Amino acid sequence: MKRWAWLGFVGLMACHDEAPSPPPEPPSDVMPRPARSCPFVGQGTSSPLRAMSPAGVEEPRRDGREPVLVRFRPGALVSTTVATRAHRAAVERVGGHVRHEWPRLHALAARLRPEERQALTRNPDVLAIEPDGWVHAAGLPSLAGSAGEHTEGLRMIHAPQVWDADGDGTLDTGAPTGEGLQVCVIDSGWDERHPELQAAYAGGRDFIEDDDDPKDYSNALQVWGEGHGTHVAALIAARPGSGGRVQPGYEPGGMVGVAPGASLLIARVLDIHGRGRMSDVIEALQWCRARGARIASLSIATEQPGELARQAFEDALSTGLLPIAASGNAGTSDPQTSPPISYPAAYPSVLAVGAVDPQGHHAPFSQSGPELGLVAPGVDVLSATLLGTASCSGVEAGGRGFVSRDLDYAGQGDYTGPLMDCGTGDNTASCGQGAPPGGFIALLARGDSFDFARKVTHVMEQGARAVILINQAPEQDEGSFSLGAPGTWPPVVSVSQDSGTQLQALAGRSARVRSLPVDYARLSGTSMATAYVSGTAALVWSARPDLTPTQVRELLQRSARELGTPGHNDLFGWGLVQAFEALELLADTH
Image 1: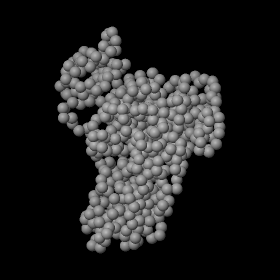
Image 2 (image 1 turned 90 degrees about the vertical axis):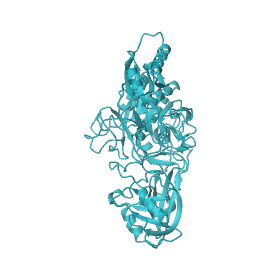
Image 3 (image 1 turned 180 degrees about the vertical axis):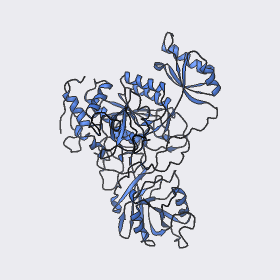
Image 4 (image 1 turned 90 degrees about the horizontal axis):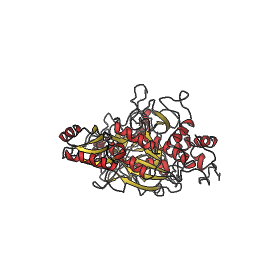
């Protein structure tokens, strides 16, 4: 075990949960994802049960009130308490409902009808009324899996060299691990059942359902969310040797976070569809700071800037909280046409994080610009997800295994039966007249339509108990597809065009489709990159708790590995975050 000693000193909706809208066609600018092997069928791969849904349009409220942020002019009242009461009274006099109050910011969040807003605007103490804009999770759907506890992304940022220098899988005595530091994860909540996170949890708040149980779950609908907050929280502080269910033959410990000794505060501001309001983000910042957090990790994004939000993040930084946020996932393969960095990452007080792939190349979806501070791994990142909502799939036929990938929302199970070629599944007679009464495995050509739910429904009505979708694009391997929404789906997997041709030649023979539940998923997005930087900041701060947020930020940027043109650039900021190098720089700076 390596022993460490440190000497010297260095100079991101408050709304009701509602039914999800079908997700869009997978973005073409996301790099093809490598298949993962399921040893029980020779070869296979995995995908999450639930796909990330984009931020949607809020249903009109029955009372006609809309969420707003109200800023007041700093007055000459004797105390902030008196001023806060006066601000609340001003809103309530016009008939509005107050949701959150922020005395330090001379502001509050409220719901107002149009006529109430107009009346409040005439109040001379009101400086401005802003929309309470949407924020959304900055993650993209990908595939599930499991691996040794030192994942690819962890090694890429040199985190194991900090606390497991000899590579024996045990934390080195005295090494910085984030111990003593609280990281506040402002996201969709967490799965409190996941063993990776139970020891790291230090408290939470649900700003969606207004209680102290921030799990990623709708009590009204009795439905779990999409696991986004669990994924990023585990990247930051998953504990070693405490894994959930993994693929057969893989490391049973699951994975470990960047800062495996850090404590997590969980602030739920996104609903089960990954949407939230900026007012809840601002309220969460206040809560995080009051609970003693040093880092706020915000894997969320919005395209709407706001003056009150800008002030709130400046205030957080000035009082000792370092906000780290995702640059956004609306980028394109051409940086010249890519939209600017999202908010809150684009605010000067926030450390903006973009994503790179495992080779260190710019991830096309990652938004870029002059505000970008750092980049970190953000493509096919392995981490924890909601228990049992990811799956590992495999196909066997003709004595061999075929690489496959579950469709998002597909069911889990193990079925053996004859293969039947059902064409493109465009109607309820697509499988022909010879469908065996005991069920079968349907082979479906992808065709030009992405309405896979309709295709699968057609073959299910004909007796299909499992479905294999054949991708028609050779360059995409088995592809990445979705059934659009949860349902009573059978196992549905996709295979490459080449594998599909071989399986079609085996029509009529017995085959097997398996979909095994696991507790880990691979996701892509600047959300994941943000978590890596947040964990690295926790390592640095745990080694030197007396540092200021600005000193920690500067240290991470100075120690980053340059990518692209030397110095700062719009694609990579100051470069790829490097945990070991940051701590070396810290030790060398007096």
